[in-house]
Image (cartoon, rainbow, N blue to C red; front, side, top):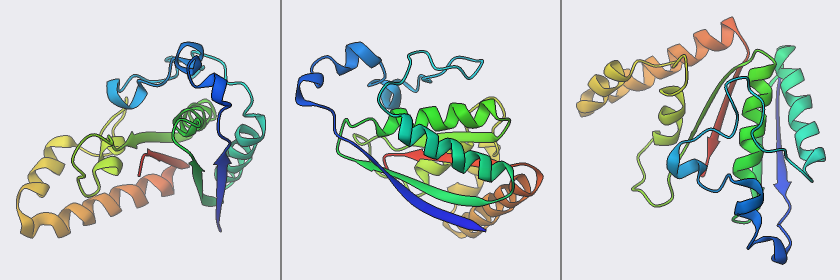
Length: 171
């Protein structure tokens, strides 16, 4: 059973725009690829004012652990905290023992088809995909079918073995 829903990230108060990076220290995440959580899965900086959103994500992760998949879309204005909500969801999944991947597009770079997804699946402690195999399959246009087939097979097999979270930012 699948469940799809959206979370609206409320905008920050105007006065907070100038101090937000100093308070949270997360604005560089997409560009430096630094994780917002430590190795234990604990947040480096506490989240404030997002209890409803985090509770909703926690409930969806609990449902995922019981075998009920779904999609959660986090929407909001620029700098409203969407990246941080995704990071917290990712770390909550890791703490629950859910296999989690996190990738994203860089708004300043050229769009690459499937780039944000592949970025997430190729990164982390235990990547889902082998970078050399993906590079080989993506080089020739006639191999793109096999690239997609390999991606589908790996995702299906992983999801059959364990709950799976894929968080993609800036899509």
